[in-house]
Length: 95
Image (cartoon, rainbow, N blue to C red; front, side, top):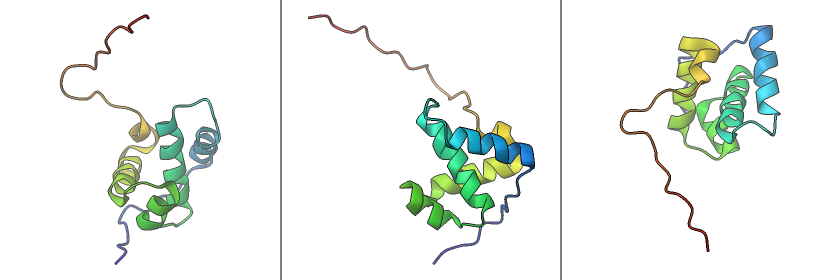
């Protein structure tokens, strides 16, 4: 059964413009484009289940980003430092 999110998203004109720019920019990393689309759909009144189906992701992921945007606005969509050792990629083998 779909649950109604307590985090109602209303965008300012500047936020809307920036999210549309991110959602339609092909040179941005994929995760930035998807996050922008999630918030735009949430602002259009779609629930988390509908957004998850449209973007082929889990409802929990949509819920997380909706909540972070609600609490922190645009800054909530940025990448954060992750715990643990940074990723290290081995040198490529030539041959």
